[in-house]
Figure 1: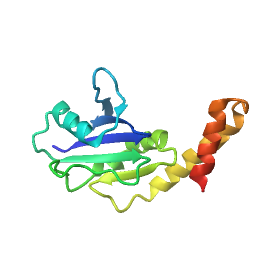
Figure 2: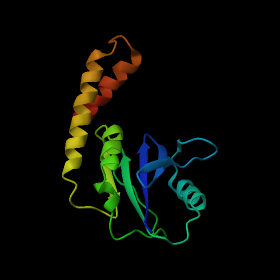
Figure 3: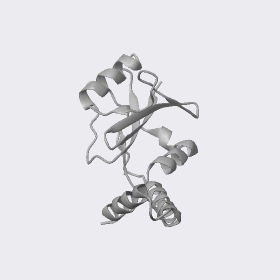
Figure 4: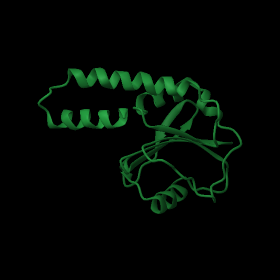
Length: 150
């Protein structure tokens, strides 16, 4: 059996959920679903948490990092079929916000993903226009959006 995971790693905070039979289950550390990302500590924790025993895994990763490496001792499945399911596309749509989407093992044909990201980006732009313009958070949100657009 292949175990599939969705990783969300933005601004050095990471969360991971296991996908099984159409359900996402968050993996928690000390009762928290989000933790600070330190590659060495995270992967040690992950291996312990899932009681990894050399089974094959697949990942979908949403990140603001240029690269996101899976340690070599974690075996990857030959396929990443769980991305074909509607629930995965919906979750990616909720989380992507214009960030990079990576898959392990790599999938070359992710034609729908850029559209998901673009739709989400358009939604965010509309939301930004409706927010209170005097808000400090809104100021930084707009600055970040401008930076991402460049």
